[in-house]
Image (tube, rainbow, N blue to C red):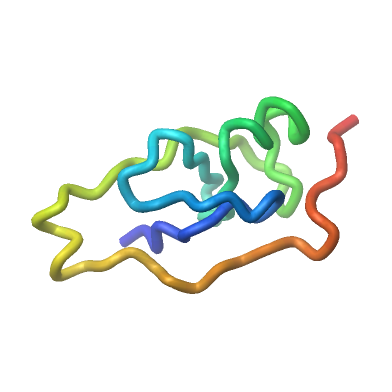
Amino acid sequence: MLQLRPNCECCDKDLPPDSKEAMICSFECTFCTDCVTGVLNNTCPNCGGELVARPRRALEKLAKNPASTTRVLKPGGCKRAA
């Protein structure tokens, strides 16, 4: 089950479980669409993988399977991709 992390690892923007702006890689690294397109060139800075839209969990499922509350943030934010 996806963790549904609560923030962008680059800019710390809040990304609630129903956010349409959340993007993830296959390791669940989580970023906002602004950082993915404007800084990261659609590539995860942690693993080099593809970033895709994070699925949204139905509200009735969130009650029993809540999103993560642990914030992950890259020290110093993300560097612009080459």
